[in-house]
Image 1 (spheres, rainbow, N blue to C red):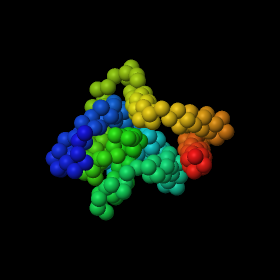
Image 2 (image 1 turned 30 degrees about the vertical axis):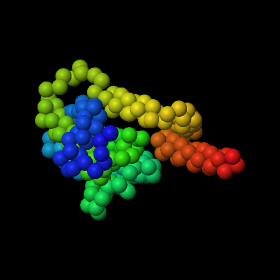
Image 3 (image 1 turned 90 degrees about the vertical axis):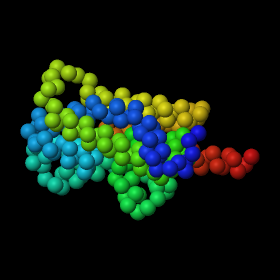
Image 4 (image 1 turned 180 degrees about the vertical axis):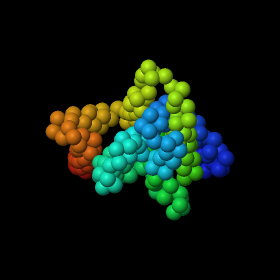
Amino acid sequence: MISSAAPPASAARVAFHDCAAVGLGMLPLGLAFGALVVQSGLDRWWAGLSAALIYGGSFEFLLIGMVAAAAPLGSIAVAAFLVQARHVFYALSFPLHRVRGRIAKTYSTFALTDEAYALTAGEQARTWSSRRILWLQFYMHLYWAGSATAGALLGSLIPDGVTGLDFALTALLVVLALDAVRDLRGDLPTPVLALLCALAARLLFPHQMLLAAFALFTAGLLAHHLATRRRTAHV
């Protein structure tokens, strides 16, 4: 096991290996985003700037159409809140308490993405140092911004008939979800609860499915925790 007190150079090197597979999975999505920016009539520099300063993943794809249509700032703000509201739930178990320094915590909060959460909230990451977490987030930020910039510069070279780029993020998150399930070590109720919450949200709140699914899942986890604690107390 790699020590959590590894020196800075070692932490950077190890973090690079931690996120290499995930970063490579982000490349086709970033290329697709950059190409879409150009195809939507926006300047090429917009792709790199958006990826570096907004760093919102799925929201950035939505933002392209809103900017191209000159949507009001209020509408953009509401859309950003609805799409990114899941990060409120990520914060409940993201190891921000292990990140040292005000500036470091600020950047770590800004760079909290689905992929960063999946890699840092698992069992294997519980001994990771502040530097290792920050380097991992920085590398994934760099993967996204770099691939988006490359996509904007080379977008015209990507044939129109190429398909599957839009599925890259879905495939990546499925793999991360399977890794998370393996970390549960036989705790079957948790993934089953997640599936039931997703189905219920899809049926009852189809237009706010993600937010509703997270809310139901959080309530279910709290209820499961309380029930487990009561059973333990009676033993």
